[in-house]
Image (cartoon, rainbow, N blue to C red):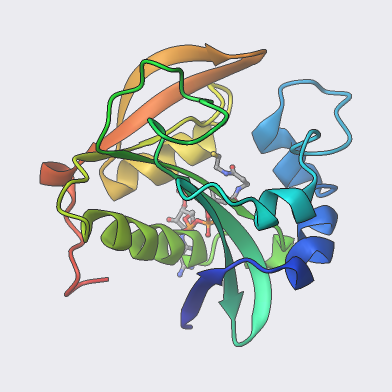
Length: 179
Ligand SMILES: CC(C)(COP(=O)(O)OP(=O)(O)OC[C@H]1O[C@@H](n2cnc3c(N)ncnc32)[C@H](O)[C@@H]1OP(=O)(O)O)[C@@H](O)C(=O)NCCC(=O)NCCS
């Protein structure tokens, strides 16, 4: 099963909007039991078309079928300063979600992360990758730890209680040859 990770386009908006309504995606983005949409502030066409050079969206496909998405940013430069104005340079921050439920637990998320991490570390300035799963999303913690991420700190992003994880370049075990 070969996964392709390609830049998102406006044609992907219907997939992203549909995935926002999937309970497993909602549960990964909010602890509110009444939440009925993930990424509630996201206007996907605007997000994808944004001209911020420090933020990019990617769509994962299997045999031409889109099944998931990633956002990869430079958290020090990204325009909304989601990670704070004092975020250090030379990092990448990633977000990943598989929208198609039948694509979960098949190793596809691992393939997506390996590709994205290898691409990030191909820039020799990048020292580490950070991610912010909800503290409640223990399945995702296990997934990230298997890739070499270490839990760093519990942090509130607005109302979201997150457990920030970090993967330092030295801890990256799956280099180009194994990916
Ligand atoms: C987190 C997420 C991206 C992981 O992707 P995934 O493709 O399901 O993950 P993988 O299949 O690579 O690994 C997950 C599990 O499948 C198992 N697995 C890995 N390869 C497998 C394969 N080929 N066949 C069957 N199972 C496999 C892993 O052992 C792992 O098991 P675990 O439950 O003990 O952790 C996905 O679950 C997701 O999108 N969740 C909703 C959004 C989310 O939580 N995002 C992260 C928060 S920021």
